[in-house]
Image 1 (cartoon, rainbow, N blue to C red):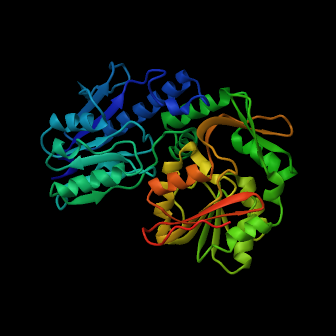
Image 2 (cartoon, one colour; image 1 turned 90 degrees about the vertical axis):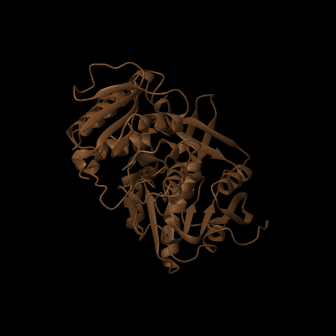
Image 3 (cartoon, rainbow, N blue to C red; image 1 turned 60 degrees about the horizontal axis):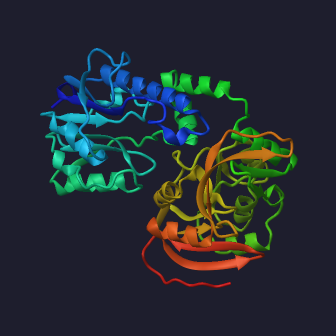
Length: 426
């Protein structure tokens, strides 16, 4: 069977303000989030329209509009959860079919040109553990009901269900879907001259605050004070002085537990990565801002500029991953971050976490604010104290091996395997 025999399905919601891309607010208004969702959907529909196939169907939750290409049939989604809606989509087709969602405007027609000569099914994983596409030579709606959706294990569970149904499974290239502002920025950067990229740039140009990395960069370069401003008036002070200084006693207590090749996520100006390299451990720092990476490299660290959710060197081969300085909060989605770390670590690898010093368990919208009174865009951050961090890591499949404190800072150690014993030390 060639790609010309495919039925191509798109599962989507009508882009209505307040009903789509709600996690992009409050950094964007509901109207802006809906506009960005519409751009992503139009890009996806145009890609599917240009791809090889015999039939194209939009399985829609909502009302159709003039943004739908003429070549699409429009079918209403069945009620129920995402598993039921996926089953309903495959229930209306016969012959080989491929379904994609509306959150990957970066895909291209060639990426959908799958063949079923030797494989019964295909699945396209996403970095957050879900999937962006799924196809079957002989559609079987029964593979969807009961699969837990919107978790870091969804893609794995869905692939397992295909295997349980007796199908051979091929993997499409991994993609990043759009859930958060960080996701939107990264996808826009890689989506070329797409509607999504242009709409994101337009929305960004209307904002009156600087980019998050500009406020952060200024604090790093000039040693300015920096804090997270919470909507309810709270301030969470950030220790820029520590980041710019040599490692202290507590830092050394953390680094002495690193083993083998170590990945320092959110490395900042590189104080830990530099010291680990000096100790002879192969180490790599990762940070989203160019200034931080430049400072780390100037200090002697090996560092890359990018998100932890982007492709990184030596995935699945790292002996240790560091989340120091509260960096479990990155992305505002601890489970997504922890699932990603499991992909980066080798089996039995070590995860070292520094949670917030006080007990907390919240994901909140914040802004970075520096000593010059500049404020960043709003973004989500997770504040997790020792107990909450430990619980989240256990839920993600890590095994807790040690807890300790040093100079008032708390640290946790985990392994990515299910062996070992728990201990609590001080």
